[in-house]
Amino acid sequence: MKSGLLAAIAAGGLLLAAPAMAQGVKIGILNDQTGVYADYGGKWSFEAAKMAVEDFGGEVLGHKIEVISADHQNKPDLGATIARRWYDVENVDMITELTTSSVALAIHELSKEKKKIDIVVGAATSRLTGDACQPYGFHWAYDTHALAVGTGGALVEAGGDSWFFLTADYAFGYALEKDTGDLVKAKGGKVLGTVRVPLNSSDFSSFLLQAQSSKAKIIGLANAGLDTSNSIKQAAEFGIVRGGQKLAGLLLVASDVHALGLEAAQGLVLTEGYYWDRDDKSRALGERFFKRTGRMPNMIQAGTYSATLQYLKAVKAAGTKETEAVAKKLKELPVDDLFAQGGKVLENGRMVHDLYLFEVKKPSESKKPWDYYKQLAVVPGDKAFPSAKDSGCPLTK
Image 1 (tube, rainbow, N blue to C red):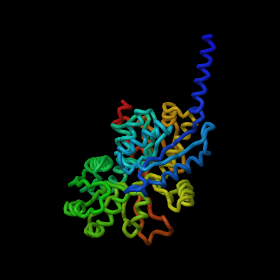
Image 2: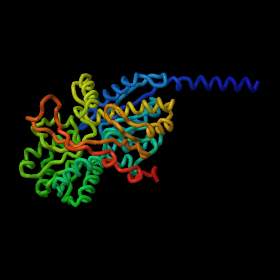
Image 3: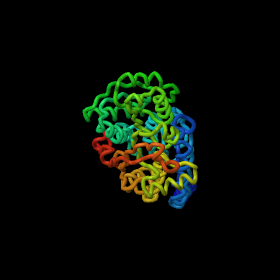
Image 4: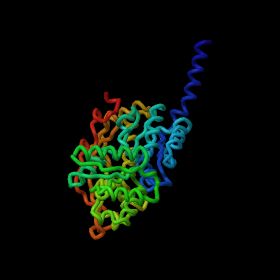
């Protein structure tokens, strides 16, 4: 009698477990789709993730792969609410892209609590794999440390030894200002001042006048998206570059250059982890993305393709979508795809790969649509990113 009851309970348990076993893999793209960063990642990152799923074959371990998306509007509380619902109710296995550092940090903490994987691509703060690192959190494409080494390092070495920062007034801006300022000072330069600018500002005039009056050789734009574009346009109106100061777009991507136009953007030096026309692999990704969307991908969108593809490779290698097993495989597998070659993931979740220092071409140098950059240097991955033990991540102690 007892054995019959146990058999019935066991059978019932199997029946209850069956729907969960039958579920496929669900990936969520959570980013800004309507605001200041809509072109930076936005719906284009959603397309990049879907492209990766198609390239992978549409299913993993015999189950369908689904990609969903939502707009967090750059609000950490809204982002956390969406992510909690995705994890608790909608059975989302992994969240990626996560533009906006304040939102990414909130989701990073929630993912740790829920034991779910997040792969941050769009947000920049190096804290994600530093003091805020966690076992199931990963950071792809770039971070504030890499941008500081690439753009900041190049400009200081070229004689730009005095800086003034226009800094986005939230976690990303603070991290970018700190990482770049620390590097400037380490190379013998000086930071003459900084001004904090609210996210999504339309008028930069008072901030730019402070930067202009500082007489700093370099005005570091520790912002991104439309905020960077607007500050560059308004700096031109004030004649800042004509007056002898240089603008450093510390986070500038191809879609920003496209929006600005070469007339306004020419001569800017920037660091990206991907450029569509750099080599045959980047062109293969870029041209396919262009056919799909009518635009070339930037570093964030190409990075989302890579992060999504690598997650699926890790699920396949693990033989399960269980978080601990997949996280372990993510840290073991090399990263070789159309975005990055020879990449590796450190113990703190940082994906290390080469980045590139570019200068924006003059209009006369551009020979075709989206022909925007000339490459100045390669920034090797082990120089761009700190080692896990030097990152400040408690996991590595």
